[in-house]
Amino acid sequence: MNIPLIVFFLSFVCMFLLRIPIAPGMMMSSAFYFVLSKNPAASLDMVAMQFLTNMNASFILIAVPLFVFMAEIMNSGKVTNMIFSFANALVGKRRGALGHVNVIASIIFSGMTGSALADASGLGSMEIKAMREHGYDDGYTCAITAASATIGPIIPPSIPMVFYAMLSSASIGSLFLGGVIPGLLIGVGLMIYTAIIAKKRNYPEGDKLPLREFWKLTFHSIPALFSVVVLLGGIYTGVVTPTEAGALAAFYALLVSVFFYRAFGWKDFKQVLVNTVRTTGTLSLLVGSAYAFSYIVTIEQIPNFVANLMLSITQNKYLILIMINVAFLVLGMFIDTMAITLVFIPIVLPIINHLGIDLVHFGVVIVLNMMIGLSTPPYGMLLFVVSGISGTPLKAIIKEIMPMIFVIVIVLFLITYIPDLVLFIPKMAGYK
Image (cartoon, rainbow, N blue to C red; front, side, top):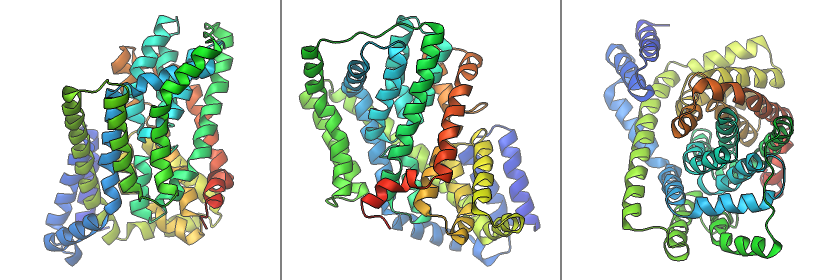
């Protein structure tokens, strides 16, 4: 530990304690280090060259604003309404039907956007309103909305997986495929929990549509549902890259919203562009500041230090995985998911490579781990989103969501220790 590094860490801790946003906090602490350090690799010229070279080479990052754009279109057009109605028709006459609808709609929507926040803010407002009207408790309603939204970045596409692929050089297509079974397992787990709670609290049953109405609704939903086929089919047939698939799917979503559902005008399009630019700008600022932060971590050889420390404790990869999972679960309670991805994943990757753990398997595990953080108090972003939408106090939501988090953690440990739950589909598709 040298003085610039000590100042770097202490200033970052101070930024965190002072509640300064994570991106400016990382930039300021990094600036202190660059000013004080005599390391040639920390010169501003070297940092600028490394940053521009690496960022310009990350073609896959272009997929991120395209996925954001697609999510905004889905939420602005009639697509979210169709997803909710279709999920409602699938569930039919079951006790606690709207709780099941909430989960199924999130599974479907996750195949279109790759964002938990898009799920919670778009579908969430519709789901919360419907569940309230049918007499569901506010705390439970918000909790199941937040918990089911974590499926969004697990089932492809996934914005966090794009960033992980950039950092680890893992196959983005295999990462996407690897998230399918874990995402479905979370959905099944939450639906089992919903069935138990619905019976215990005597929540209302759903309405069973006549067969003719069901097929009519299904037919009307096909254009919206087909966006998943456009996105994933393009990637896995090799016709387009993940980045190009993002552009293709966004364009398709725009066509469906404008010409098929006729629920998207120029005013909506302008707002979608504004929201996309705002979100992309926020993510870009975070990527830039996190890169500076992780660059310092790299030149100070902190990943090697952490790897040697952990490997001196144990060489057992299963124990290492549980240590990493616990560490990331704790980090997720306090730090933004994207900051964890960009700063802390490069620190643990040398350990993963040393132990020969599959990068696709680890990527899906760690993305699910970080998604749990979005619903975990005290700083889970999804908690604040659903609380803001509904006006429900955080205390009521936290009380209801803790058992749901436990269900998702069970899935996390299942996929951690049974790699084939992640790798089965990628292997079928030719991943080695």
